[in-house]
Structure formats: structure tokens, C-alpha cells
Image 1: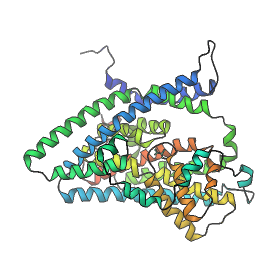
Image 2: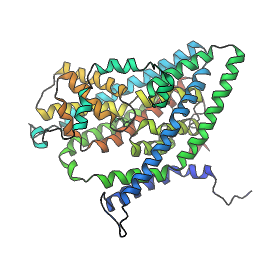
Image 3: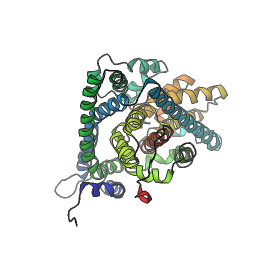
Image 4: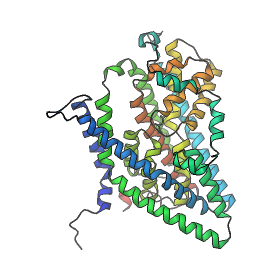
Length: 437
Ligand code: ASP
């Protein structure tokens, strides 16, 4: 039967292209009408960009708590025996830690090779002006220290799981949902079936709502991009270009070489096809600068696009969005060493090792929200004894780098999901993406 109407699925199939066009149009619109520019009649386009972008972000955040609650509980409750779950845990963590460490080492290598903090052998700190202009950031940084990591572990156990959900605190919520799912797995058949039915239906409902939100992504992303380019001029970036290029080069190596090679060799899966499938989620990560806000799209692409089971998707991705951040880990390392170079401080081997370890911990502790990684650098600076004011050096260029590192964070989570699924013996992964249909 011929269809003359556009079905939601058709809209979704064109989504990568729509989002790409929205990104470009948004960036252009922002440059054309910068903040403060009013059109005839007094209408300020910046207000509209802000409105569209925030509405989209709010809608994404709206689905996250019920979506991941339903997803983790059903995934873990159906994950099988204790041993099966333990294996899934081990594989997932092995992926997280290994890829994050490789990312950090890539950053470490490039920052030592390129030395963006030196110009003709002279530290660039004084040239960039070492003052911390933003007092609220200074206050935020004061209470972040290496000791804060113990606090992060402590806060993983929620005093009140409902409050954690209401406040959108991801780690304690995930922790409670994992326990809840494990407990269901151990119930007698009658209660187990009743619980599973409820949570599975809840999850289905949330997937439908998520689908609706995803269809609005092009409009939201247009607004978010336009807001970024309308709000910041290019002048502030110029002295930081070498540093920015170092971070970007390391991110590109990790995303385009390291991860695809791992997907091919460890997972024996087609990395290019995987990337095409993930494009809408990666572009959303880029424009929202938030792995958590992107989570609904990431889950949709992995479960509905790549064909990974709900069991693996719902375990690997929510956890990954919160604790697996390869892009952030790499960035933390490059930024800390850039600050050291800019101050003229030579970090020895032991200090560089401390940087690697704390960068890993900081990336685990960073929330999946914009600029979380920037604040976490203070943990590394604190650990190696560098002044926290150094963060002021890299503030101007951070939003752009945040976009790129967030996309890499989501890319690494998604690679982890398909590889872990493959290792769990799942078949037919990515079979339905283009050539497969
Ligand atoms: N914005 C990043 C994310 O959500 C975290 C960061 O700031 O590095 O993944």
C-alpha cells in the first residue's frame, strides 16, 4: 500500500541529516545574529535560540530518571544468575578502565610532544594573564580537592533513593536501581513476574516518549548551536589555539583510531557502520555538551539501531554516561599538563603518573553535564600541587572542547556497549544498519 504521509519512523531515519543541517544552520544563525543583536521591531534572535535549546534540554532531562530506572531494573532483573551478572560487570568495567587509560596516555604523549604551554621555550602563563575573573567559579573550585573523591564514593549510596531520583543524582540512583534489579532476580516466580511486568511496561512507555523527544532534536540542536556561536566571539580563543589543537588532535586519535580498532579487533564488529548508526547521538552530545542528556538517544541507537539486547544496553550505557568518560579523562590530563607548562613547572615522572591516575578518577567522578570536567581539573592540580587559578587560563576555550570531549565520551560508551554485547555472545549486532537491510 502506498503511503502518502510521513511516518515517525521516516522522520527518524532522516535524523542524522536533519541534525547535521540543524548544526550548520544553528552555527550560522548565531554568527549572523550575535547576542544583543535586535532585528527591526526589537525582536532579539538570541532569546529564541535560548528558548529552543533549553526546551530541548528540559525534555531530554524529563525522560532520563524514569527511563534509566525502568531500563536498569529490567536489564539487571533479567540479566540471569549472579555469575552472569558478575561477568557483565567485569567486562563493562574492563572496557571503561582500559579505554580511559589509553585515552589519557594519548593525551599525555601529545601534550609532551606539542608542549602547548610553551612558546619558543618560554611559559605562556604571564601572556595569558593568570587571574581568575569569575568569583563563583573560584568558590566552586575551593571545595574540590583530592579528598572529594572519597566523598563521591560515599555519595554513591543514597540516604533516600526517592530524593536522589527527584534531584537527578545519577550515581546514587543507578546504585539503588542495580540493587533493586538484583533483588527482583532473586524473588520467587510470582513476585518476580509481577515486578518484571510492571518495570518492563514502564520502560516501554518511556521508550515511546523518548522517541518523541528525539524527533524534536533538530530544532533543539539548532537552538543550542546558535546560542553557542551567538554568545562567544572568536577573539578569546586565539592565544589558546595550540592548546585546543592538542586536545582535539588527541581526541581525534582516540575516537577515529583507537576505539574503532578496538571495536574491530576485540568486538569483531564493523566500526564504520557503528559510527553511522550512532551519528544522531554523537551530534546531540556535541551540541548539548552533556552525556547524561544524550543518554536517551544513545540507548535508542544501541538498542533499536544496533540491535543490542536490553540487558546489555541498560547496564552498560547509563553507567557509562556517568562514569566512563574517555574524552574527559584525556582532556583532564592535557589541561593539567598545559597549566603546568604555562606556569613553567616541570612535572617529573612520578607527578605525571599522579596526573594519569587522578585524571582517571576525575573522569569517573565528573557528572555528565556541561563543564563538569573543567571543575574536576582542580582535583589534579591539587594532587600535584599546582595553583587552582591555572584553570582561568583555559576557561575561554572550554565550551568548544567540552562539545568535542562529550561526543567522545558518548562514542566510547557506545563502543563499549556493542563490544560487551558481542562478548556476551549476542549475534546480529549492527546487522540492520544500511547495507544490512
Ligand atoms: N560535558 C561532559 C559530559 O557530559 C563532561 C565534561 O565536562 O567533561 O560528558
